[in-house]
Length: 123
Image (tube, rainbow, N blue to C red; front, top):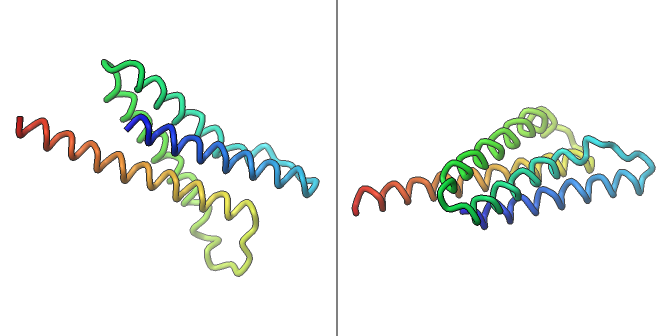
């Protein structure tokens, strides 16, 4: 699961970096374009520490799920009202991308937690 956190975190950092670079290229850079990168950086750090510290891995992966869930909720609340619009700006595309990556991580983590619990009870 730490590797999944790292990969999803890197994807979020890339979404933030591309969004900010797009803003710079159009002459309207916005620091809010880096929000996915902040969430991604948190996931990468949690994944790296969980990989190296076996005794706190479970707690760090639960923290990573909370970060991803907050990232999904924060973006979904902003994106859902805009889905009816015919225009998809770069910001909306970045928000949709962030929501998808965060939701994917949450789903994969929940499946992993459930499998770990099943394996623990059968042993």
